[in-house]
Length: 128
Image 1 (cartoon, rainbow, N blue to C red):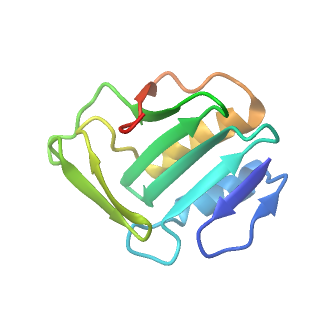
Image 2: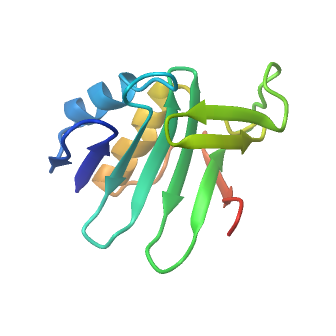
């Protein structure tokens, strides 16, 4: 596994602690606004944003990319709200916003090869 964090050196074989620390330090407006965790086959999970404004996606090499969503749409972020981070602007649905702690859970599940937490569901990412 390899953890890539914008603006920082990649970490090969990251620990749970390194992943949690890196993901909790992300900010939409800061020097590090996205990260990914990639396995040896080229599959990955990625996050953009930070804090209470995170988007999660996963990719299976040779297949498709999915965007994470949940059952509790944001009452303050309607469909079409834009996530602005250093790599670009992404229109989001109201049920696609996650907290950093949830992102950590998803990344750790990917790292350990266990099922994703029950709060996250997946739909095809826009453009796929």
